[in-house]
Length: 230
Image 1 (cartoon, helix red, strand yellow):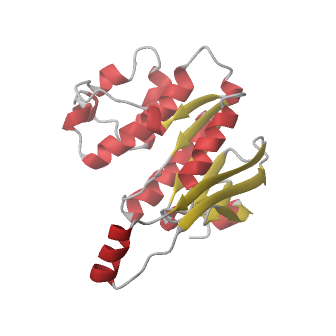
Image 2 (cartoon, one colour):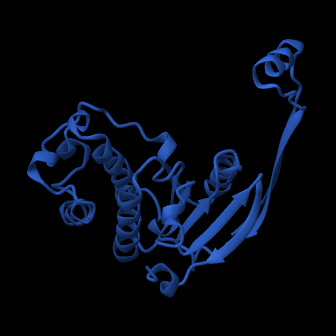
């Protein structure tokens, strides 16, 4: 898949009031600034099913996601974390159809530590913040799995701010569990995760794309030896 695009943001001119305030409070005089996003990549989506786009805040990851989404929608059914809305009053047994998709959901809930009766019959709002985060990710995978109107070989999941503000151990355990589950049960689904959590780099992805200042700094294929090194 060829991804090539350039997006330029106009120069930001600061007003006299802003310049004066900056000088008084911070002792700095801000200069006119602009941002240019420039990506030219060719990704083998047959080989690389799990892609982690990594970079600090402001490096262009969300712009990359939005541009990628436009292109993927021409050939794939796209499930985007930013488009997901979960009714907080629904119980998990109402949010997920266990009677219809029993085997898939038992594996999904077991993999991510949510298969307990007190969780299954709780409303989304009754779950802890960490559990809600897990359920949101699980629901994305479920949406990609259950939609019968699409070719499952052409399904892509996009997650911005992936495992941001999650403690290091929980993030790594979840990322590794995600890889194990998708490799075994959703091998035709593509995942693009965008985030700044450096504790999960090279732990779950097939391909690591490191971004700096709107450009791709490096592209690294991640081997099993690297993923399992720690």
